[in-house]
Length: 233
Image (cartoon, rainbow, N blue to C red; front, top):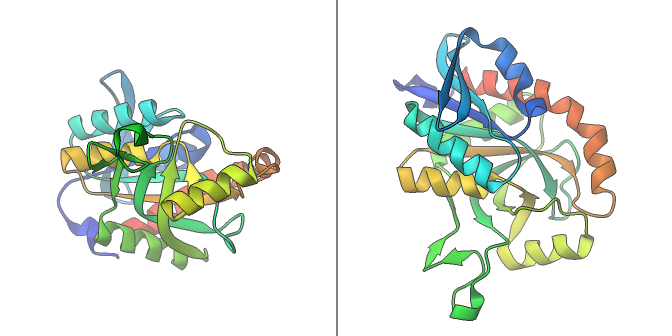
């Protein structure tokens, strides 16, 4: 038991695609369907722990809206799971990345004197909760994953260029890139909702990304369920 989930409250579990949450959804006992802010949410218990689950859809706007809906539905903390592309050397397909912080790499108002990924002096993203992230990393390690910790960069694009990957890594000191996490982080930060993000590496965000993604993504549902069950203890 990590101890993190001993607190009173409901853990929100979020993924962007059905393949990322299907196994978790099937494992929820006494499921009940809600619709909040137009988002479908399933509530129930997982291994005796109260949870809610949602599939946001791909992209930052979908992720932000669903995060807000889960907060409104009564979530006390949130874990976002799914896939990402690696942009740092040595990280391989099948490895896990637990975010220390997240940033929107496609936010750029540098013409007005702001740093990339920053809006009016505020990070377009957020810093993940330390206790939740530690517990999530421990859970991933316990099921045999090689776990990396670092910055995850998000943007509304599926990166398939080694040059673009290298630029994102250099500009934001990022180790992985995906399409939703920083929006989840920004909403959670604004709302004061503790959160953590785990991304399984499905590709290396280069010219082979679409092929690698297609070959790996079918494994995600079972990995997400395994790590969440371990996280819950």
